[in-house]
Length: 240
Image: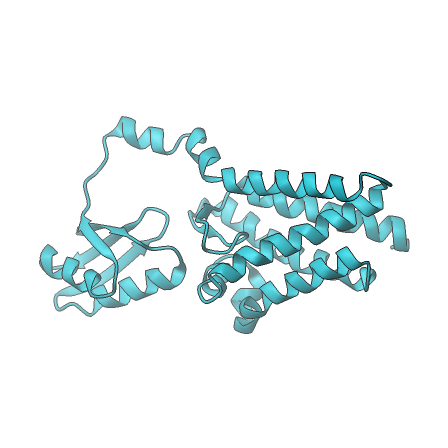
């Protein structure tokens, strides 16, 4: 088996492109590419240089993979590394919370805070998805059950988030927006839980593919906060 380190990948589409290029090399029987590990494992008799050239032609950088020492690998898998990777997510949540508090500083109500928080959440998160819109659906479909079944859903999803965000901020169509939040984020949460239990290492698409965030418990917590808010507002405002 030949192992290659791959640089420049950021979504499932990149993985498919590289795997296709490698399997077309004469002498290659199979090729598996890992996005999270930035690694390609190739079975066959093809020369390393030939494999590297095949990857280079797709626009990515490939080098022979060198196994890291055990201590270095252990350090890479430690919690501080995960926290560092998720720092953008925590920072965005902080800014959304601060902005929501400022919007409600003169007349604070729990309902007003929740609606504005959910509205800003959707607007900000949809913005990041649009930054790399063409690659978002493929990454989203890796864990969201609806996106897996309905290909068009991944393409429409950022627009749905934008619409829900505006609805909460403008206080229009609140009941259907709350129901939609529970349905779409509930489905995504089911997919996230499956990934966490399977211990698969895939990219989270919550902030699109521009920011390479790992799928972790933080993603589950993020969705749970929105689901709790939506459920609370349905119960308190509409008696559901």
